Amino acid sequence: MSVNEVKIKRAPTAFELRGTGPPTSRTFVLGDEDHTLGNALRHVLINDARVDFAGYCVPHPSEPVVHVRVQSALTARSMTEEDMDVVGGGGGGGPLT
Image 1 (cartoon, helix red, strand yellow):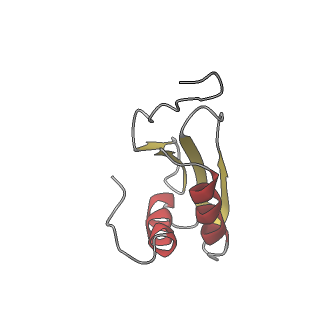
Image 2 (spheres, rainbow, N blue to C red; image 1 turned 60 degrees about the vertical axis):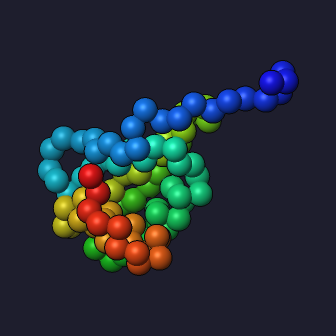
């Protein structure tokens, strides 16, 4: 490995649900993802009239995770599951685990 090569570590988990309080507001941590999925998912969520707020961030360039924050009138989990199907091409990958 040369000096300029960087090995990016794999994320410790593929998916994590964070947040306390009302179920209409949650943060989803997606492992081994970057701005590509984060921005696409945020765009689809924002265009859904039932979503009050959607945003994403990559906490640090060396961390292979994306944090997606969702606030909606329905439960944030159900909104994200529906819109992940849109981003994924409607494959119906099933519920978030």
